[in-house]
Length: 125
Image (tube, rainbow, N blue to C red):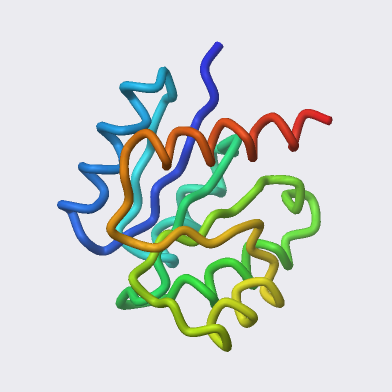
């Protein structure tokens, strides 16, 4: 059974690029266009990993991570932030909210698959 990844990004193009990279790596992918819709989706499904953007309408990625982590039964799901934001203070906000890691856009598909694989392997230990 392949791992399921939830992609949370307001850009349809970015979601498509991430989806293609991960599906080509054998992962199953679900998508949400913002943090609010992702939280709604998480009421009925629990992915193995979440990848979220920071700057989104409705609910930004940091708020999404913090809100999801507050649901204590789901805290073991790793969350990677995939964004163009490189500011150290914002990265710290992500860590403080409960993000597992930070990847900067643009990304290389092989790099993304490698990070996802490593994070999922660490989760299993």
